[in-house]
Amino acid sequence: MVAAARAVPCPFGRTVEVRAWSATIEPDAAEPAASAAHPLADNAYGVLIALPPTPSDSEQDLRAGVTWFLGRLTGRSRPFLDAQEWWVRAADGRDWFVTVHSPLYPPEHSRHWPLPRPAVLLVPKRAIDELFPAGIPIDVRKMVRSAFGRAGQRYPVVPGAVASVFHD
Image 1 (cartoon, rainbow, N blue to C red):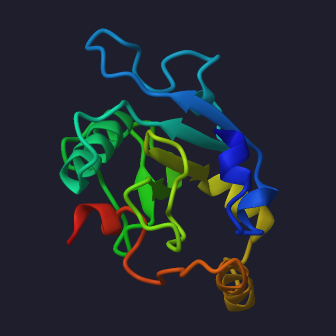
Image 2: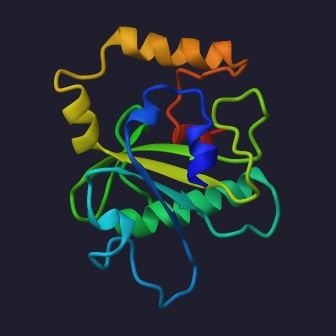
């Protein structure tokens, strides 16, 4: 899973250490970050979460899986998202940058995922603030979009990564 994430042409995404975790829908499973050994317990690196397998390969199932996971992460049935829907606030108050990747997106889309289970990538605000204390400059954003373009992938500017799943 991490190798698939590293294959994405985003140079910014490659600067953050990523750890992988597989989400489970078992009712008695530990909540995200419930133990110190859980990848979400720390916020020094990005976390790539493989969502549970879905009954079908539909956008409705993708929305349900993302809603389920973010609901567990945030402790809310409708997760808090910032106005642009790139950020989510976890139940512990930490903010995470969110992108959703799925094989449902066409191969030329920046959120296309080559593996059979969709994935959510969370990057802690702390990591981004350390890389860009004054905010992510527009030239860095242009560099990311150009890298996707050179790789033959379109990079949608709006809506946010979560919005593209929650809104038609």
